[in-house]
Length: 177
Image: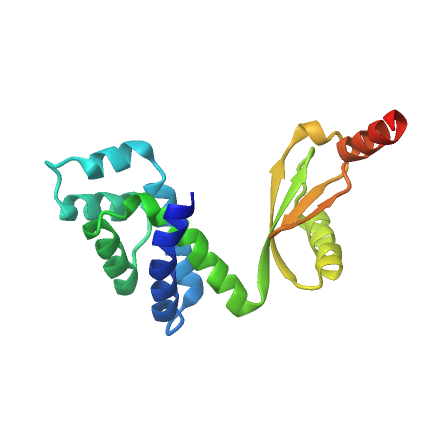
């Protein structure tokens, strides 16, 4: 949604400027936790109720987040709530993480696999992907059984698809041409 992206950008940039003066990794974890809480539809309905105060919404979100929040993150959350931008919090967190990654030279990678990839095997896959994409990657694995075999990797707007499903699709196109 373009509108949420437009709303989120100044919040994310301001948050990053303040966070870069301290422990960015801690801020990143806290903002991600707040984003997960703010993604809940029932919480947003509660927050939108005219009978609920901003302090009540803040107290609920900060307690559900499950971790102590730095003063700057608390101030950020209060600002988002008071400005009625709770719905934009996940987009803010996403843009904030992109700024953190850009500053540290790391890109997010999503590895889609039909089978779980963990531990040493994941480390080997990430190492080869870092060579292929020529940058440091922060990878997470999502299961997608319909790939049959192989993996599909998404890094930003780049896609590397070595799955059996993709190979079958290419064969189908070649045979029907």
